[in-house]
Amino acid sequence: MARILVVEDNKMNRDMLCRRLERRAFEVQTAVDGRQGVDMAQVDRPDLILLDIDLPVMDGWEAIRILKTTDVTQAIPVIALTAHAMTSDRERVFAAGFDEYGTKPVEFDTLMDKIQTLLAVRAG
Image 1: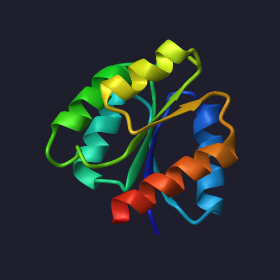
Image 2: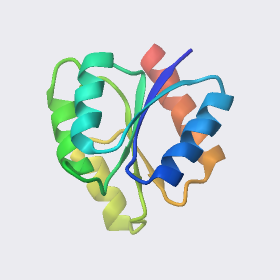
Image 3: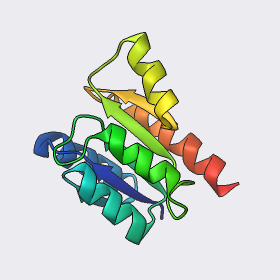
Image 4: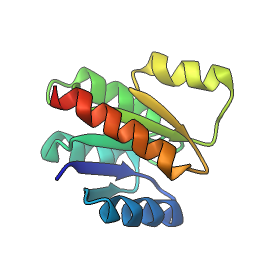
């Protein structure tokens, strides 16, 4: 069972993602801000992280910088979740080190395809 860390400050979005991922047999952990998400990732080392960009305490930009420059978390695939859907936003996400990009509102089947692809690549 793959473990996914959902870092999302919006309770409704977080709950929806968790329920749907758990129905797909994922073990899900949650964090409500970027700092908590980074701390949990460094300790728990999930198989994948869904990371909102607009977060309190530490935003997703700073969180991805830390995750991708820390030995214990740099190989964990991270999918950005954001309401920003312009081409320049997508380019910025990949330039920052995210492995994939998803827009809000979340299209769950598309997100699942991205999750499965990244988990398969990680499994080798």
